[in-house]
Image (tube, rainbow, N blue to C red; front, side, top):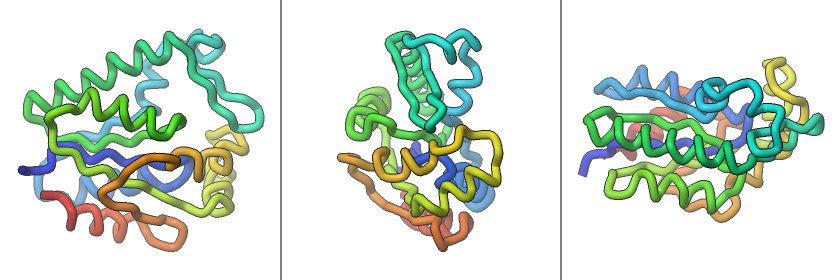
Length: 177
């Protein structure tokens, strides 16, 4: 069966977005890119100041509440609907709750052919990227580097610590059926 969805999971500043752009450039067919950052940007600003929405702590911690989960579920179902309608999709996500995050995607993507990819990056390297980006809360990369992978099962893992995005993308493309 042909791969319909590629799910990239990794912490903040691990290199997922760069890999997504490279995947779109090297995959033979057009693939849409969607990410949790897009979902957060689409939410009302008030959701970023509410304990029922999503909160970013000054130490880089992230907590999500019930309203966020409700909208996230609807978004996941919408992404799955696009795939069922014929689009191929690359998902860029951060599994803050590890296994439970993957299970939410598995439920939404049920019946679809999914390639699960872990994007790893050493904590110190990700923290350096985070600092250079300047658009993230300091500490987010370090706090997420390992926790997002706990209990998650992958078809493939790549490590951007010393491997460029294009090489990681080529390794992923080799696994796309």
